[in-house]
Image (tube, rainbow, N blue to C red; front, side, top):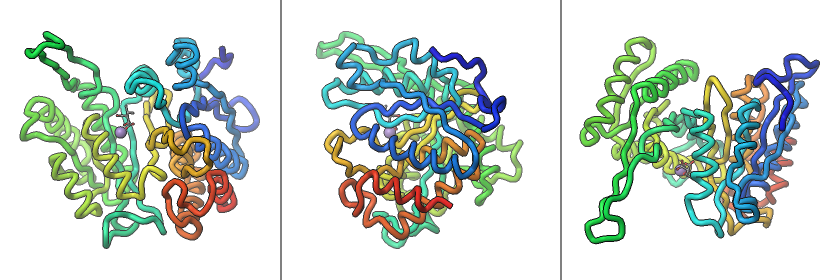
Length: 367
Ligand code: IPM
Ligand code: MN
C-alpha cells in the first residue's frame, strides 16, 4: 500500500520535483521497451532537474496464469494515487484473447475515467513510410479518440445463443457528457497545438444517424466558442482515403472510440509502424496512462530486437502531461536525431542496433 496522500504535484513539498509513476511493463516485449523508456526518462529528468520515482506492478499474462488475478483491486486503488502510469504491453499468447485486454487495459481506461486517447501521427526524419511522395512535412497530425464509450462500453447481449436464430447485439453508447468533454478537449488541444488550428470531426453521419447526429450537433455547438479554430468533417471511410492520399490536410482529428481505434492503426503505419507509435490515455483531471500502442509482440520477446522508440515517445508524452514540456521536447528531438541519422529501419530486428542500444542512442542524443 502506498503512503503518500496527495495526487499531485507530489514533488512540490520536496526540494526536487519528483513524479510518482506506476510502471506496468506487462507482457511480451513490454518489459524490454519500458526499460529503455525509463532509462531515457531518467536521463532527461536529470538534465532538467526533476526525478522519477518508479512504482513497479507485475500485472499481465504471467501473473494471471500464476495466480488467476488480472487487476487486483488493491493495485487499482494504488494506481488512483500516482502522478501517471507507464504501461508496456498487454496480451499473452497463452491467455484467451480479451481477458487481459478487457481486464487490464480497458478496465483502467474506464476506472480511471481516461476519456481521451491521444495519438500523434508524426513521421520523423529518416523514417520510411509506405506513402510514396510523402515526407515529414506531410504527416504530422494528432488523433483525439474518445476512450470510454461507444462500442467499447460493453453494452449488448445474446439472444438464443448457439441456435440458428441467435441474435448478438452490441450497442454504441454516446452520452452528451462524454461526447462533449471529448470534443471540448479536442478544441482546446487544437488551439494550444497552434499548427493550422484545424479540427476535423470524423464520423459516419450518413449511416449512424443517432450517435453521430449527437456528435455533429455537439461539435457545431462547441465550435461556436472557438472562432479561431477551423472546423471540418469527414466520414470515417473517406478519412482513411485522405490519410493515405493527403495526410497533410489533417491537423487534429476528433472521433469516437471504435473509429479512433481503427484509424490510429492506419496512422501508425504511415508514421513508420508500431515501433514508433505512442499514445496517452488521458484524464485531464485525474491519473493518465501512457503506452506504446504496438502490443506485446510475443515472437520477439526476450530477443533484444524490438524497437523501444514507441515506448520512449510515450514516456515523452507522459513528461509533457506532467508539465515537463522542456524535457518532453528534448526527448522528441533526440528521437528525431536517432531516426534521422542512426537507425537503418524502425522494424524489429532491422534497426541495425539492439533494443538497449537504441535506448543508449537516444540518451546520448539528449541535449
Ligand atoms: C488499442 C488496442 C486496444 C483497443 C485493444 C488491445 C483492446 O487496440 O489500444 O488501440 O482496442 O483500444
Ligand atoms: Mn487499437
